[in-house]
Amino acid sequence: MKRGEISQRGQTDRREIGSIQRAGVSGGISGYVPIQAEVIDIDVESSNTYLISLRLLDEKGQEIEEFPYMPGQFLMVSVFGLGECPISITSSPTRLPLQICVREAGAITKGILSCRVGDVMGIRGPFGNGFPVEMMKRDVVITGGGSGFATLRSLINYIADKRDDFGEVTVAYGARTPQDLYFTSEYGSWQAAGIEVGITVDMMDTSWKGNVGLVTSLLDELDPTPGAAALCGPPMMINAVAADLVKKGFEEPDIYISLERHMKCGVGKCEHCTLGPYHVCQDGPIFPYDRVKELL
Amino acid sequence: MTPFLLSQDNLVLLLEELSQNLEVIAPVLAEGEPVFATWKGQPLALDKENPLNSPAEFFLPQRETLFRYVQYSGRYTFEEDPPKSRLILGMRPCDVQAIRVLDQIFGSGPADLPYVNKRKSTIIVALNCTKPQETCFCAQMGAGPRSEVGYDLLFTEIEQGYVVESGTPAGMFILKYYSHLFEEALPEHLEEMETRLRDAENAVRKNRPDMSAESILQAAENVDLDRAEKECLQCGGCSLVCPICHCFSTMDQGVPDGERIRCRDSCVLAGFSRMTGGANPRETLGKRQLHWYLDKFVYIPEKTGMLGCVGCGRCSKVCLGKVDRWKLLEEAMRR
Image (cartoon, rainbow over all chains, first blue to last red; front, top):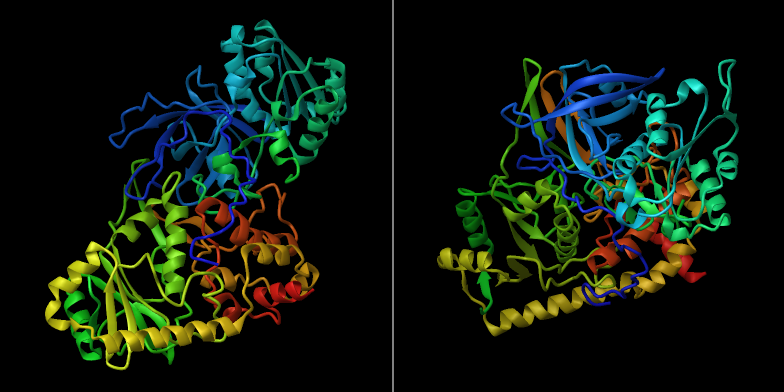
């Protein structure tokens, strides 16, 4: 074998889907220095989940107004002293302010949730490709389960604000209990924008009058016409829903899955988020189903 | 440029002069073992085996500070150290090739500036390998025992000292600036160099059979992962000494002021890809072992055009288990 000579296998499909905004905002000599983000508002979404609104500050403490991103992209959020973790952007780029939805899961998310209005955390990003909204300008079904719905809210509000660009839009969202449902105050505004919204829970309580059961049965009921699909949720749900959508006539490359992985850098170097040949932080987190179904 | 000859004594003089302006890193003895460390006049260990700590750790250290955060009334300021000028002496061809691979990985896409900045401010003085060990298989991986690219200066040990060739303007500058220490290499010097390198290559080729990326890959897919699971102690040592492995983690130390640290990590460790919720995409050791092979022989080649292994043999040397990766691979090849 000669130096540097290797048969180019080249099987890996790295065609870009989606976003334009690749280079993350971060600075310093190392490029790993976060920018400061001041908490300006905190909303309760469920017993352990909060929607946090942020205002970005430059080195002089002045507000940074330009922060371009796309639905589906994520941030590396720092709590100084605890570390950094990936959090998807929950707000739509069509609206201010920048928001993240955080569920208490580990040390860093706990640290994020201990921040009060006026406190500062660090962010780097946006990272990842984001949903390919240009390719989704037709009938769209958006399916989410559990905390995976946080990233889809960005896409739903984006579509609601650019409603004329899209065809029929259906949202199917499942959570464990009615108390675990996020963004309940916004369903009305989505319906008003002509988006069909279906909600289901695994376990009901006395107050619940809606659907009970899996998202897949909810999808059967909603019966969306084949077009583009956006998916985010636990791995079991993703596999079941994607297979279900294929049965319903959706093409595998039109089913866009948002994946979650452990991440440390956001720039494809630390290797924590590798999925086969892909780095989820750079090549994803949105993948067409056909590209990753063997790897999931 | 014609090759030069540098005597052992003049090498020390050269290092003394260079170390006035740069940090000189060279193999020296620590408790009898050769290690890469800052040279402060101690005896050089260039004639010993390649140190177990790969020089890659001067670009991606086992532990480094990315930045320091300082809090003042609820807001933060950040401090960083600019990279120092350095020269690494005695980098073997395998390690030089490994740095070429890392340059591709860390320099492309969004670049990893802590690596790139250190790399840009470092002069590489390579040492052709005339003393390969039993664990070496650089020739099979196309990385040695002779360097062809990737160095600023290249040394080859001969009886009278070192034959010195330059590979970049920076290397030529050193040759010119310190020309009083060098003399022109004579044909017999070059002849001796060639003989030594030929012998080294023959020795290396005896260590392991010739392998193509394809055959390695095929073998990797047939590795007895059950056995690997049983005999690997999951210490991660192989990744920490590998000159191409570059998995890392980050963490913060200190409240309210402190620093963000990054340290080497390993994809064979159980918690490497585990998420906060507990889900772990590579839960079993077998899956993680397979990923290690695939990364080195499929994913890295696909990305960089170069193999993800340079045959330095460090992973075999450091392995605490009964069966190291390469033994497993060779067993699979024989099946």
